[in-house]
Length: 145
Image (cartoon, rainbow, N blue to C red; front, side, top):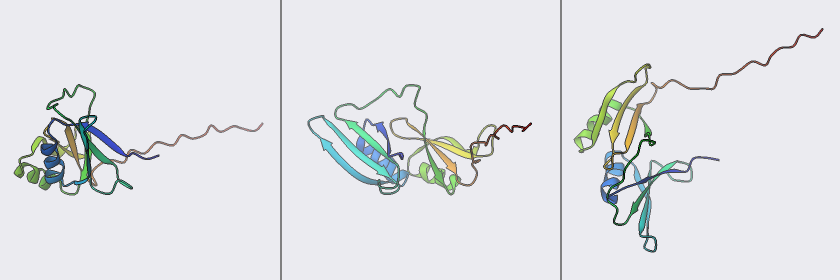
């Protein structure tokens, strides 16, 4: 198994495509309208869907706003230069909601930006995140008697 995509409902597909493609540098991989269901799907990402997880932007025709609720967290993107990336995002009209810096209680350098619908996107400076590897547990030793 592998992760294929994350779906986000968006209120304005063009604004969302502009943010994910122009501001965050993703590519529009495919887009299709479904007149019978009155919705459009657009898939964006950094590589082909055959070997990369992508984001599915779902636009339900006539719905321009959603309540995000309190269960959604964020999408995370690894970046080589978090400070430069945040400056570029701001220069393109993007909203940085947490400036780059170390996370609380850790050394990973992070920042947060917000898409046009209010979804949070975490930026993580590559090479600063701690590797969270499962700890090995030793098998209990038995003593032969």
